Length: 321
Image (cartoon, rainbow, N blue to C red):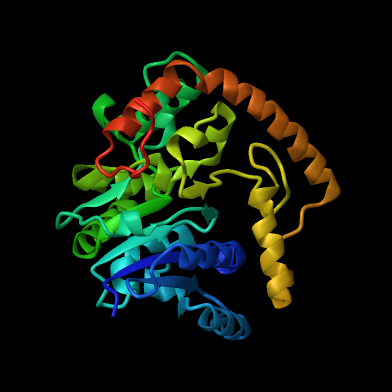
């Protein structure tokens, strides 16, 4: 029985894209060494039945819990704080992955790497690489970190919680402390679980290559051929199941169409974008591509590459030096 799993947590709104990512994770891992778990929160019985059948057919474990199992947390994203309670007890390590991701490479290279007891690995959030600059992005993120009481040093270590590779035992303590912290904070933090995880987790965190959590907008500055992503993270709207829009191409949008073709019973779970919204996003994404190329090239890109070279858990991809 595997001691390692890849897990997703989702409400009904994210079940479809989470299932697509879970299928890709299954294709990119050794079945004898890693289980894939899709955890649903407050899923109605009929939907449970449909997804249980699909998951079983594709060697994915589908588990369902209620809001009471995550202490009635106000958002499903906080379910990752409760993974020590939700996961079967025999898993010793886990890779948590957000549902707005796609798996494009071998994950065994990551999952075979041991973790020191009590630690977890996550990538530094892209916004941390703006600190020290004098523009709106940097000032806004600095203000956010200051509101949480972070020192300048901690702000530069602020991590993204969309992909987390963790020692199970250590995560139980971190998750419980983070949930307790969430309950005591007023007003509630802007990024919910990510903020409180940073508040309690930074001393236990290892840095991880962006290959394992690649922000899709990094494509705008051509970092994908350098970093060779295994996990693409579509961090903001629109999403690739909405439409084929920059900075991604049809290779990012097509998996959702392919899954609908293979499992037509999932069609009703895929949100459709109105023509007006599509036009608005098309114009917005073209402008964002131009803006991000201007804002993230140069020194910020060099900071990202320096981080990549020094990450505690690397991708295994060798760049020319």
